[in-house]
Amino acid sequence: MKLKPSDLDKIAQKMRSVTNLRKGTSRIKITVHMGTCGIASGARDILSAFLSCVEEEGVSDVLITTSGCAGLCSREPMATVEARDKPPVKYVDLTKEKVKRIFKDYVMGGKIVEEYALAIGSERVL
Amino acid sequence: MIPMYDLSLHILDIVENSIRAGARNVWIDIMQNTKKKRLDIIIKDDGKGMDDKEIRSASDPFFTTKKGKKVGLGISLFAQAAHATDGEIIIKSQKGKGTEVRASFNLYHPDMKPLGDMDETVRVLRATHRDVTFRYIKHDKYMP
Picture 1 (cartoon, rainbow over the protein chains, first blue to last red):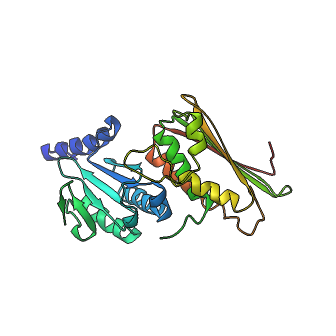
Picture 2 (cartoon, helix red, strand yellow; picture 1 turned 135 degrees about the vertical axis):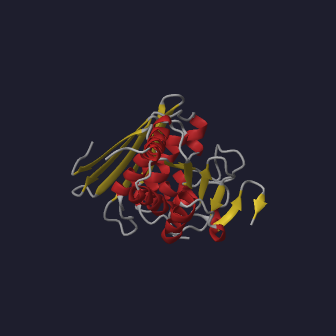
Picture 3 (tube, rainbow over the protein chains, first blue to last red; picture 1 turned 180 degrees about the horizontal axis):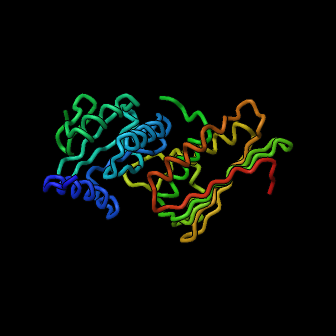
């Protein structure tokens, strides 16, 4: 099969996402809040749901990490999703189903799932 | 809210403390001795450590080193789980060297919590903190 210029673009794009991870510059960072409050409300299951989403989709430019208590213990489990050049989105009261939806729509599709979000950015409250 | 229903979640919570203390290595040892009816959990790290005052206050639910926070429940709840089985918790630490948390439980006490899914705890830790080395060993019928 002969390679077309458009194929080269595709290969370049694919490799870019792989090297992004190697350099530590990922397209999307997901922070699951894992303070005592988060863990007690099921943050470990939320985290493994995100991890299985990454495995299922086979994406390499999504970084998943943890942080401590964010001071909103009653709305745990929480996760903050930060796409490059976009304001961070805080999702609250997460369940495994919500995680799947967020991953499909926002991480893969680029569309913010507003009904699960607490706030977008630091100022604007929905 | 679901309470901390098993020990693997407590361990996850304590190890998150280690990571926040800048640990590069975390050792998790679980020693179960059915003959002596005892379970020991040892979590050791090479993080920034604590001074004597911090060690004494670590089990106090109203003590925290985080700014803007009034409570710190991680160690307190872990200690409560141990005390509920007439067990105990010992914290050893040296500033700049690291911290060791050792909790012992009476294995057949009615208030003993199940160990839970340790593999899942270690899996999520390894997946989210790739720059930290986690060593987890469960020893059966072993007593130090």
